[in-house]
Image 1 (cartoon, each protein chain N blue to C red):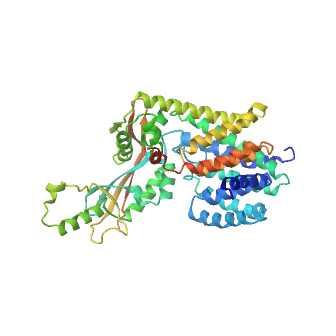
Image 2 (image 1 turned 120 degrees about the vertical axis):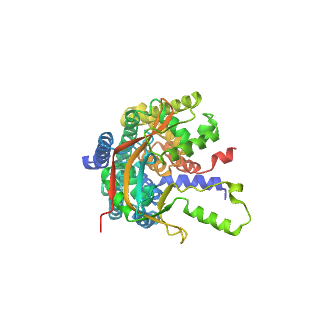
Image 3 (image 1 turned 90 degrees about the horizontal axis):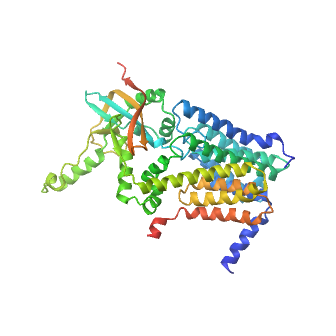
Length: 289
Length: 190
């Protein structure tokens, strides 16, 4: 029994599943792990999705998908002001899955909705980055590098900000809110190198997100050839550093759903990315130092 | 692919577009943060939930003026909902909630532990060894885990205001700017 060979067999078995079954089962897994925003929904999803996932024939039961979809939509609609954007994306995708299991052309429905939802999600993300006015000039990224603990590795190792300055910036962000006054202000430790790194990261993100929106919208052969690779590169490079696993998982499943069945090497890569995303949870900074 | 109906094609994408367009309009015309509401504006602006704070100047029932950590009185989901779209209505609601609560200095638990250490180590000159570390300037709602003998205060009037912590990239500075007018809520006479 060779573990590497057994793992290869496992991936092979997954790819032998009918494509709609693989997508629906992975969606159920994602809902089980990352689908809930509050306890009520968590209980329902753990029970329903868990049982559908392990069942042989109920993974595509229209009645159960309608139940899952209804619970998610009711709870998320109630909580719309505070839930994260990937919960919205999950809601749309669960609705698409429900429509698919009710349809005679399940895989076509999943393929179409996967492609269009990726295009729209990245399209609106790009529009917001241009609209908000703090992104294209690097200001948002400068601030994020200084105060977001998840970015400390990049801020320190690449942008060269001393750890003490990062800690001080985070304390300042917390403290200034305790003394709200129009006359109080505080300066952050900003260097030319930090600005340059932030500007590079900002434009790279705008270009990649905009490119994904366009590539998933277009139907020419160039777009079809490249869109999966660009999406995979974005998911792997973003969610390993910023481990919002729910977002990473749902985007990967949308990509897998939209990918033609004959592109088996790309479908394997999507499955591989689901595994790679888990690496983002490891304490990289401690391991590397 | 041609066999699928318009309903199967456009139900989910149509809802996404509808919600996102409404979110953009509300964000640009009211105070909805770009990060929330389903418009995919996360990581686009520094105007996130953590950048929205409430100031609260309060008058205690015995006539003292104190500062209160007002949002601490609210559960995290409700707090995030309020911070997503600050409004006068939410301040009025919060004001009435605060007038119903008891408050203790933010450092109440630490102060109680410090008192106990002092009592158990009477020979040590505490102020020479550690200085005066007390900070009683902020009050927060009393919790079940606070010491029984802690002195609490009730409020007779609160003045609340929303603020936004903003980052000015040009000067590299953090500053706070007010959102809307302050709201004062008073205890009604019995």
